[in-house]
Length: 208
Image (cartoon, rainbow, N blue to C red; front, side, top):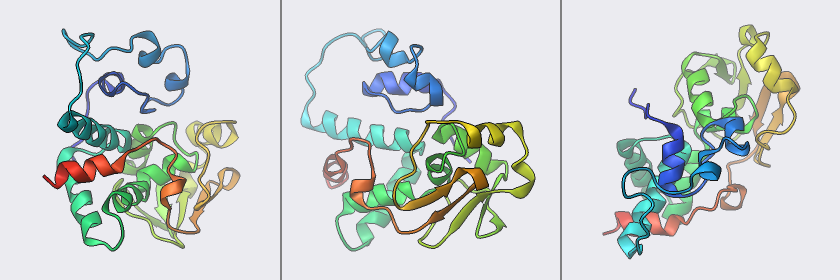
């Protein structure tokens, strides 16, 4: 499975905003944005006026990097969103929110989405009692996501279950950290997505 393996902090610097790709580091003084906010590269500090296409491209890059998907997969999500009823941009964000790695993170069982993706790939999660090791698995209303029984005694998951703070579960997810489970009580709505996306710019980019 293709995935980005480069420095995560460079992605935040390139987009000029925190994408919360490294868990606690992102809210500490070690955050790359706090220490050096300019874009990476020789000309990163140069101020440039952003044109319409540049704004659309940056919004698309921000969104796919935030959720940790690569270009081809992101385009497939967009095409699927365009086939659904309703607003394409909202459909796209809702599909990305329903990824299993995102749910694992949102229920508090991973430090960040990168961490969640690795934990899912290693078979630590179940959906409705069956092991699922595909990070892009799309959950639906009524699904119960849980940490596998044999994994719950590990220091990793015990620490996450006992930790205070971290990701706050959205209202469409009934999370129970003490029991390592979360139920998808409804499909996410646009207002449940707390990151400041402008999905219309992505629609405009792909509509060219």
